[in-house]
Image (cartoon, rainbow, N blue to C red; front, side, top):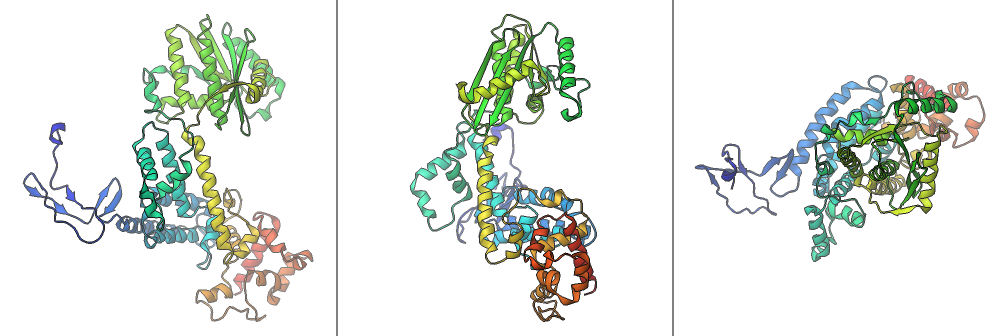
Length: 554
């Protein structure tokens, strides 16, 4: 069969690997071009090592070795009080290291816990370098404060994203296999074992309605998108309006846009479009400024506002085909929607309705009709645009029913929300035994890492991260790590932890009074924790200075 394609098998580059459970293997003797192919225990295919038992040990060990080399570079980039800022190290980790862990991760999720825990340890090592944490810091505290999900939930999210993409393809062989597998009795064999991740996630997503297509929508066009010259048809700029609306008055924008429309589109048939989304109420509408006709739609599915804006443009183009005129301009106040259509000519994958708009434009060209898509600012008291906006809001409740299935990216929130719920359950469970101090400051994992928004140097950020975790290099945790002979304070004789140093220790009384002269700091037990909830506040910066001075004399 290979020969019929004009190809030959190279015996020097080919290997044989027999995939089977257990240690017993049948003898295999395959001869190609007079040479016997060697039998190997593992083979690399598309960047993934496949071992003969499909336990993924070879792949994970090879991955850990690569990550370890990167972590050695991270170590020379930063220390406690010097080096690269944690927010930049965090981004480096996500782009350089975790991207490698993500590759095919939901496939090797079925590996043994002994293998998967190696990757967890690698991530923990990276988090300690990024945030300057000491070794005793619990992993769930580091993950939460740096806003980096545990790898098990990351694999869950990527599996869900992959399945939604597969569900968006008509007659997907993977979905057919999963449906057949779940409907059979084979699924009962996992009652006492961990289910494969794809099956576990598909159980959650199988009833989700997703827009399906037989092939990529780009191939539905009669010509390649580059031939449409879309840049000449979509106008997303207006001269002298290149700043946020707050920099100009509404009256100025209104007059400027009216003059622009009169000059650029004199003699054009004008139509205004808009979309509206208020919770689960979604509407789209267009307004004919020449005849004062309008149509508004109610969209029942939970799609994005950009999708609703594009649907309004598409319906306006359908309306244009029925009008006996040759020059049209369709106005939209959604710049992102028009930019999305313009990106159809690039390698980026766009929504089906965007390609439908291109197809409609090509069809109108064949009818000798010229159509331009023009962006205009929203809410500037422009009559046609305000009418379209009002109609879209009205249509969200009482418009013509439009059946639209969301694209797979608009369903990703289901997987994201599930991952957030699982992460919170995991965080709550771990916080019962460890990280109790941290939970009083951060009750649940945040959506955005606070280190990305603060204007603090690395030393202060590391001090803040250590204080928030409750694990700082004093005697309590020094004793746990075998650095100090006992966990107690040398002066007070009690356990020397963060709370003792900041609130109780006698030897720090003078410095403490210097930074915090008010009584509330000493009488309110939770005052210190309240301060740490706002790491960039003036009081928090005083805490950092206090800790630095205490550490300098120890």
